[in-house]
Length: 446
Image (tube, rainbow, N blue to C red):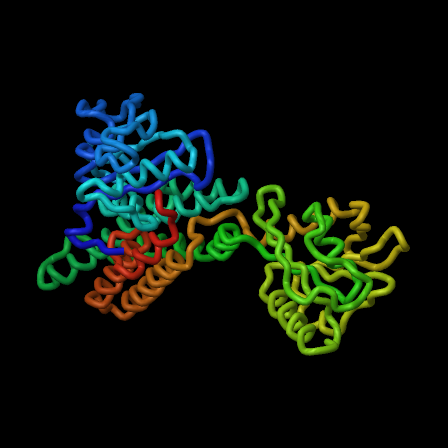
């Protein structure tokens, strides 16, 4: 996505609501030609800023069937410069949501001088460039749009509310204060400094480093919550893996058969487990494969199971534990005795999946384990954010070592490195390729 002067002067438009037929469709416009476009499509008199009005939209080019042909009757929201999402002149057209209506309005916009279809995330990028959002806000907004469960929504809402920004600003202020104190000892080295600033510098650095360490300790859980937690369903052939998978899905998502080797690939099921975003994995039976295709399936099952957040090892009277299980077991995993309606057996939980017996208890046990993997909920859920914090922590560690050596110039330099890393965390400084990667993840109308 370009961000040069020429690109910034263009007026952009895009469908901001979902694709497909709906009662209402929202089309966004933003840029210096917004008011001119509104005059041509909706009449010469512009509506007051941030006040909805009902107007007839017409095609000024006449290419929709004749001069001034009516496209739709729509609610128009106009935003003067500095009053809207992007920080520049903008508008929203709330049209009827039929496909033909939306297509006609978008075509009419595309024929307006200085207008072009927005690129993915371009509205949000303009908001960022106008200082209305920082990069942590942008990432939280993307998380909020993508949230599928209540806990994901809550975590994203905290980020969009500025929790990470405020914390980073507090850390940054402390590091700037510490750097200023150290610089004073350097600048006034030949004169009397009013007091020994060493204890305050050490205390400021220790407080920031403790806070950063705490957030880094919670980062893995926050990232798991944002991305989803994988639970692999494992076991020997005919242990009931696909039967359990289908019971969770509520329909025949996987083929079940008494013939071993039926499941060849890894099937996935997205599941809202009381707010936790869980992806259950139905895997190939663990056994010595018969044939090249089954061998690939077993290899994929082992690889996905090893990388999963948690594993369920299914066992039954006619499907004893597979030898491969020993190398996959991790703390917190569960053994599940299936086909409990045919007889009791050894396991953490017993189920009869076709009847639903024991499945709620199993899900409760799974949720308990996964909740522990997430922890109390941190603010840093993106790899980019975690790396910025790690860079700040490393700079502080170097600064603390320099303090012990009495190297004031080195302390000051490392402190500057610390608050520059915090600047990268919230996007105060950054490279174009990082910004492009963040904004490309958004949809066209955002």
